[in-house]
Every structure is written in structure tokens, then in C-alpha cells.
Image (cartoon, rainbow, N blue to C red; front, side, top):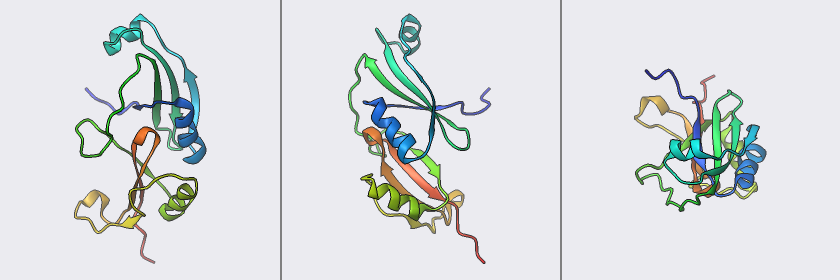
Length: 151
């Protein structure tokens, strides 16, 4: 059965803009850029005349994210509100959420709200610093900082 998540994937309208966001602003590393196409992908995705630009992006923890721009067929924009079925979000743990928020805000990144520290009842995130921002094509991205340790 399932062993682990091998990668996550996000479809973007402009791969170069997405790479600027994920690599230049967030500090991730693009290791490979591919241009897959052909009958195999048509069958795999149940689409016709698939042609892509695909970037393999890695986090410092070696997690893998695929950013895919479909050259053909062109897709339709969706409303990436978190409450819409099928919409996913990506969560990154950061060392200093306020510093990251300030840096990205200065770069023009749109946040839903400044960071706040939770007293949530959900045990997995109790005490974490959290905020959401809008990535390329409105991809919801959550930043999280582990609870501050008492001295």
C-alpha cells in the first residue's frame, strides 16, 4: 500500500512566474525543468495533445513539488478559495513567521491576514504561528512557525 507522498503538484498558468515566487521569494530550489509531451501523457491524464513545462522544485527538507504549466491543452482558471471542493493548500514551516511575512509583504505578496499565534483546540497546531498567503494563480499557501519555547 501507500509508503509516503512522493511529490505534490500544482498547475500554474506561467511557469517562469511560479519559479520566481517559489525559488526567488521562498528560497526553494528548482532542480530540473522538463518539457514532457506525447501519447503516454495523453493516456495517463486522459487528455489530448498534452504538452507541458514542468519544474521539479525541492524544499530544504528535500520535499518535492512539481510546478506544471500546460502548453496544451489550456486549462480553465478555478476559484482557489479554501472552501471549494478539490482546492488544496501547501503549508511550509518557517523559522521566523513575522520576518518571513515582512519580507514577502515588502515583495508585494498578498496575505489573508498577518501572522497570529494560535490557542487552537486542534492539538497538532496548538500554539503555532500561522498565516495564509496567495501564491501563483491564487494557490493557497500557509506559513507555520512551531510554538515558541518557554525560557
